[in-house]
Image 1 (cartoon, helix red, strand yellow):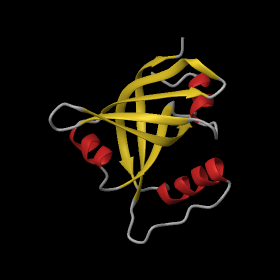
Image 2: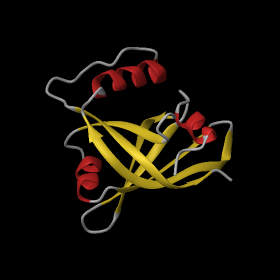
Image 3: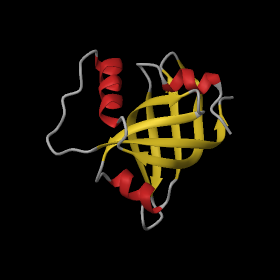
Amino acid sequence: MELPNEAVGILTRPDVLAYLATTMPDGSPHVAPMWSDADASRGLALLNTADGRVKVRNIRRDPRVAVAAHVPEALWPPLAIRGTVVRVTTDGADDHIDALARRYTGHPWEPTPGQVRLILEISPSHVRLD
C-alpha cells in the first residue's frame, strides 16, 4: 500500500507533528512526537531521529509502528497509519534533518557532536483519513 496524496500533504506540512508509536520490550507502548515527512514517489512516511533513542531500539526489535497526525485547523479526522519500518538509514539523514529544521523552524539544523541521524522509512499497511 502507498500513502494517499492527502496523507502525504499532511505529513509534509510545517505545522503538523506526527506521533510515532512503537512497542517496548515488555509490550507496553512508547509514543514520541516527531517532525514528519513523506516520500510521495515511493509511498512512504519518513521520520528522522537520532541513533540510540528508545524508539530506534524498539524498531530494531519490532519494526511494526503506528503514526498519528492531524492538521491544526481540523482536529478531526486524524491521519492514522499502521505500517512497518522497512529501512533505517543514515543515507541523507543529516540533509533530511536540516530540511525538516528549516521547514519547521525556519533555521538550519544545529548538529550535536557525535550524534548519528537516521531516517525511518515507513511502509503503510493501513491508512485512515476518514
